[in-house]
Image (cartoon, rainbow, N blue to C red; front, side, top):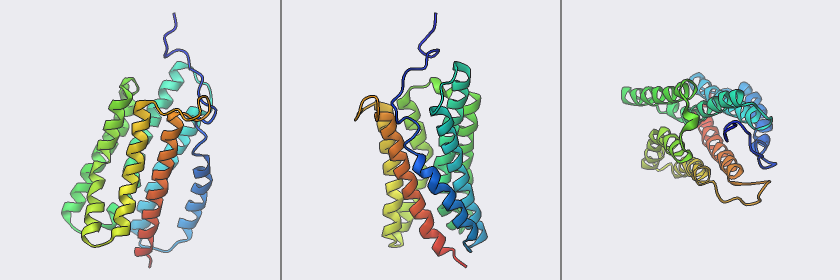
Length: 222
């Protein structure tokens, strides 16, 4: 007798397609960054950010745009959950590198990335897919919590535009995770439901992080 995990349920027609415009933009970003002259450490941090983004885009596209058997779907979901950890870590990494001004900052970044990598590898090695959606949403939100330091830090320096943009990253990702955990609203049943809304808010979060990192790219221009 098959369980619910053995049978892949029908999904909305826009599942795995909301992020497609980001894929097109992504390759333009890679090309633009390659030609841009800026501080090497910041440029490398931007490449880490974009590689983490590429990983989540690839896993998301592969997972949601084919019908997989139970084994392959489980593997792809593990990779997808690992990619989410890396996306969270990568989104604020360029700014974190920009503010590596003392040993405390270095320790904070190293500690944070130790947690990110533990979460990513743990998602692959252990069956994180069996945990409830609300639990995963909380874990991912906590994984990004150290980045709340930077909007506070920039606000103390009266860099309010940067601070607001940084907070908007958290707003979009956390709001999206709430839709994911609740499984609603299903705006257009069979076409655009809560999971697609989650993906859309993640795209908004990516655009906010891109805006912040682009601003700091200008600060690191040589």
